[in-house]
Amino acid sequence: MARQDDDFKRVISHAKEYGYVFQSSEIYDGLSAVYDYAQNGAELKKNIREYWWKAMVQLNENIVGIDAAIFMHPTTWKASGHVDAFNDPLIDNKDSKKRYRADVLVEDHVAKIESKIEKEVAKAAKRFGDTFDESQFLATNQRVVDYQEQATAILKRLGKSLADEDLADVKKLIEELDIACPMSGSKNWTEVKQFNLMFGTKLGATAESAMDLYLRPETAQGIFVNFLNVQKTGRMKIPFGIAQTGKAFRNEIVARQFIFRMREFEQMEMQYFIKPGTQQEWYETWKKTRMKWHLSLGLGKENYRFHDHEKLAHYADAASDIEFRFPFGFKELEGIHSRTDFDLGSHEKYSGKKLQYFDHETRESYVPYVVETSIGLDRMFLAVFSNSLQEEELENGSTRTVLKLPAVLAPTKAAIFPLVKKDGLPEIAQEIIEDLKWDFNVDYDEKDAVGRRYRRQDAAGTPFCITVDHQTLEDKTVTIRHRDSMEQQRVAISEVKAIIHKEVDMKSWLMKMG
Ligand code: ATP
Image 1 (cartoon, rainbow, N blue to C red):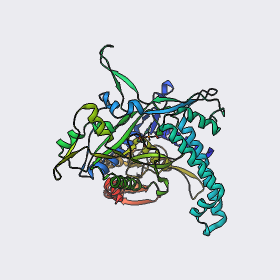
Image 2: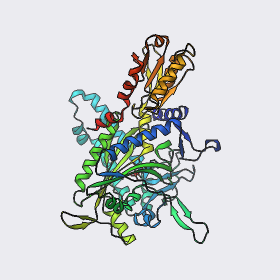
Image 3: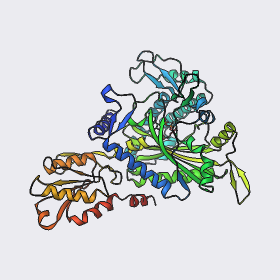
Image 4: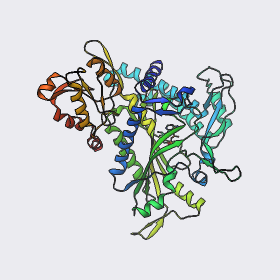
């Protein structure tokens, strides 16, 4: 745990030091769980968004993108179920005055039991060596079987009490499991209460005429209410998708994990409208497709896993998370949900307008079913950033800090250095910049020894450094240094653009999705 904490602290301080993420309103001591993206962060975020948008919209003839407003008619949130059901159960510790999500306290307790199982497996694997059969061990080792049963029973009971809104039982469960406040160790808990996560605001000038509004807690509803407009004006045929990226707002009870859980964040969502009865097939297809998108970025297959939900949201008939190994363990990065006709059906009811699709072949109308993919842009940023930050031992015994961002996402693609600040070298470096800037973000640096400039660019995540030296004056060549291998090549200035292009071109990265 201590190592994980240190790794995570390093990620947060590196994000600040290299101009990726700042605390919001820092000069006023910040605002809890609200962050600003800095000069490099804004670029990385934009590149991730573009990588997603191209994969979803540009590469799929039957998916189009929209940009709906953050404010929506308040009835939207009645229809979607958010007014009545977008609650988290909260509990306070009376001694430490810390507030927690009651379900998360129980889930963390289960995670501890699961890590005991993992430890037993690791121990046994070591003892038995090549002959170790993990599934047999899991099924037959009494201690592991007991742990597993405990974990399942706890989750089942939690699921049932939440579904029944039996908050007294959630509290009882916390007491029975002897769960203590992680900050203080105290077990002196308040009752469990429901807390709605939507931010309210008002529209209108005078108190009497003002209308109560909410800041949208998800982007999806902007797509549902526009379903028919898009279908008709785009002459879309089922199956088709509508994609969107944009801000969402949730008054999270506990928000202590940097940009993992924010109160203002950005989502990238796609709702895929399908014929009822085909949802299972599309759900499986989108699970696979989205995983391929993730894997194309090369962050390592072992860092992803699916987590299929047993406890389903009010709108879903199947749901799965793509979890990523963050510095604090595996956590949800993206959700894939089979939402049935819940949303469109409910908007029909509340608006009194038909939201149906007319199938010209079968000559029938129906409310389509929906499979959605929903990923947090900020969580994706954290996944990419934390996974890329590495400390490397070098051959000469020293270490370097390097941010091995996938080159396609890196904020700056190349830094151009004159070896010295004289003899016409800065001018040539500027000429190279003038040529490259039309294709890529590039940076100029003439301060300090070249070795230090390399280190700075490594830490900022720049995939290429190009050095202009005295030989350049003679033969128009430069050295190009690769961030990850640290390999240096002597190449003609005229070749530089193509070399960079080959590594950063979005098309070739996207093609890895297969
Ligand atoms: P969690 O269980 O972590 O609260 P959720 O299941 O409520 O998340 P969804 O409503 O499915 O999340 O939202 C889809 C995606 O939006 C999530 O997979 C996540 O990447 C992102 N997301 C949700 N809440 C936040 C938040 N507070 N900050 C940043 N990203 C978020």
